Image (cartoon, rainbow, N blue to C red; front, side, top):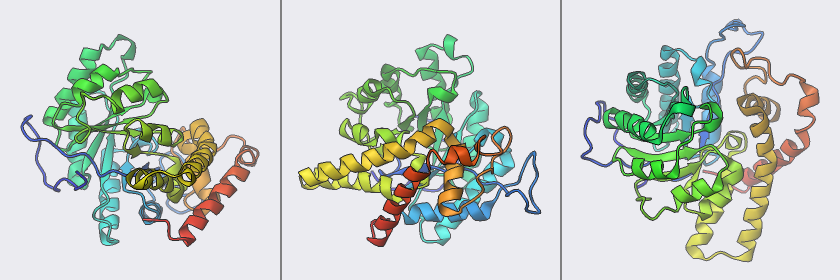
Length: 354
């Protein structure tokens, strides 16, 4: 189940063949890097892509054990990018991974549109640029009036025609609190071209009703948490891993928790394993507080301040500018992030990486 789909063009127009889910592992919803203030390419309104830093970050992640990249998700500021920029971004990172010997690390391309044909066009272009999967955000504009049947039919219409295997992206925080019920997931999981979900909410009972549902084929439909602070609990209920923002700053720490859980489950879990997993989950939760509070703004601040990667003010409007209170805000997080940096560097020195 961990092999990648063939990189071929064309559209899936039937429900005959069953697509495979992405390989199990920790994925990162990568930020999109833009030209820094003070550089010749900088534009205050629409700074261009900084593909050099994008590639530096991508290789930093896969060398730290990250299984694959989610490009143009919520953290990627996808709604601020033009179509040609989307294609350029995906193509550049697919080439960078391939050239560095990481052809086995898939790219999952995000879509964040409401209209079915527009979504399908984005998926088609993403595939042509080198993506292997599409992560499709739920249609939230009319969320209060949208029925579960309407949600099901919307995703099925996309999956029937999608050029790539589809993952359902359930993130109520950016979809007007659109709710996708576990019973709806059960029906959608039976579609041969729907291969999993990213659940970016903390409703643990709903996550359990999906990840542990005996009526869902969990060899075909993978459940990823979108919250690293939920990784260990989600693994215990049948989820396969995380698509996590903090892993974009400290990949080895999040990968370490994932690996200990799976290795200990295979050989027999010891008290030492439990103690280490609890400690790792605790440290991850400390770091995730910044991600929860600031989202992509916080992730870019952390990458710039901890690793000197990118610009801490490097978003597009209205996210440009970084923390509103600058150093004062960072002082609330610096001690935790220094400790996480030291742990990350320790794991690197011990060879605990991909």
